[in-house]
Length: 477
Image (tube, rainbow, N blue to C red; front, side):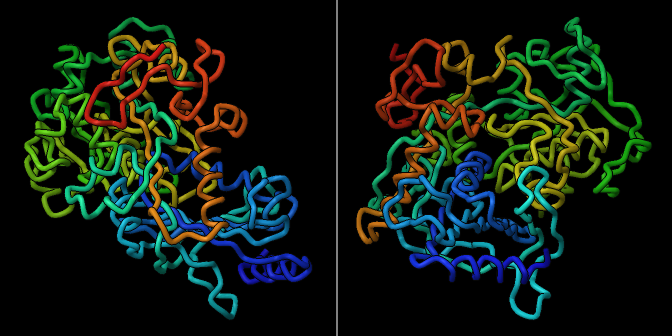
């Protein structure tokens, strides 16, 4: 179906329903929850009717628009069966889920695919492999909109230095997020071999046989102290020449030959809640000393690493063959960085929320969600012999790195429908039943939202962060 045909079909469906209307909902902020946000949004759609997603062409803040006909049974007052539902997700970091919401400042959102004449601003389209009536458009244009609400990985004050930028907000814990350390597969396989694990082959990545890194190395790598993989094991070798193994969609990611065992760090940039909670917990830099809160930091930065190639572009990863720090504004960039490192023979480590799994495309394919699509070449590793899974987190075995995500809204100025939509997302994304049924990987419900910890039967966190006030999690059961 062509771009303008989708718009016509959606309009015709809306016109044929007496109560049909267009309801728009815009959310800005944390990208660590993008996959789960997307699944929640698309779960609201009538899959028997035409629907589409539109992803911007890229840049610092690529955004996605989900447009469909609302399905029956949602139970959201003000949104009726047959209404056209437009949900915008601006893909900034956690700071974008705070200040723009507080100050009613416009953020970047994706435009619809057709601006007239059938040409449209989008460069490509694909049909959803599961939902036949859903089309995904990439390389689309963008406009701006004031966000209805925002999401941050941590409480607002931890990613906004001025009280005036969060004082007009009400915020509530939405869900516990499990974060993990991922490494490029060339590192993963070598670590497996060095640690005597059984599934060192080209197809299997069983979490039970994932290699382990010591927490001290993780801290050292991100601080620039442990800048070579031989710090983990002196017998690790530089990756082989991968010039014959090229990414199918990214031919420029070609290994030129000479490689080294230098560490490549793929991380988020300042303003990210992922980075803020990493600093406060893993790097042991609480509010008083972390730069997210106005203090010093132990983190190595792109402009201070061992190469000058990325000094003017923090997100650039070349074949540097020396210790390199790559800083991205969104989680998708970290995902891409790890895969690009693999194809270039670089040996990388990165931070990501475990709602993102290797090979998971979501709905956005080549060039949109992340540039490697299903060709991910990274996997999560254990830390201190514990894998970063929700099951381990809920059991109380994994407390290395997690956050309590915050749902932020202005104190006044909403319609009843706005309020009901916000409450739906807040409740749905944090509901253990929804976490299992949609599914929403990498997440656990919060006892502070009224859910009962039942010793592992359901994904309900047994730990609390006391509002993320720069404290490690406290076991409550």
